[in-house]
Length: 281
Image 1 (cartoon, rainbow, N blue to C red):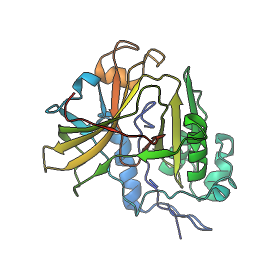
Image 2: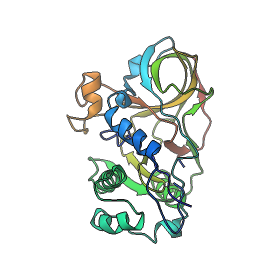
Image 3: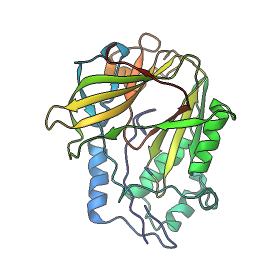
Image 4: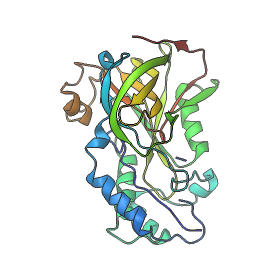
């Protein structure tokens, strides 16, 4: 079986921002998938529309938001740890990897792979730990190391309650279903990266000034209902001044909270505990 691969643009850390099937031989993407990959690159601006501030998180607030949808038939699959670790995962080995997956130099797939490897090799900001998980096992190991080896963990993600092809529109917050994450609780955020198999950029900060919410929103165009996960970072003092969120929100490091919605293919890992229901802020 060959590879199917979609180059998703991620939204944190310059929006590098689920779960192609692969056998012994990989093949090039078909024309339709490659065209979509190019459209994604040209359409990057709307894909940045996920940021807001804590004061915006209130029932009745209308925001333009981009919520990409996961297509199980084309989304990369998680490989077993042993299989994933049998291949090098390094930009120094890019030429070998392109030959292995039968991707040509300069192709959209090759550029996406190179971007992913470079992102995974970037240095974390002060107080942050990062890890690129190439398997579910490695993702869980990293998460347990962060939140505590004795802690039972749970995973949170955004999901669409209605079927719709619209991914970018005005959404109204109709309910704040719950606030998750008690004080002094560590969390791990994992963001899907474009690669022939599932790779996740996972990171966690030492700062305890984070708030996690599950929010219900309704789309303006077609009544699309989304139960979205949102994370609010209250301490942004260590973030780079040119972080894309500051440009979009018109704020500076440390001057304001920065919140963002998670797309359906990304995860938030936290310890298991009782949650707090809420309908207003």
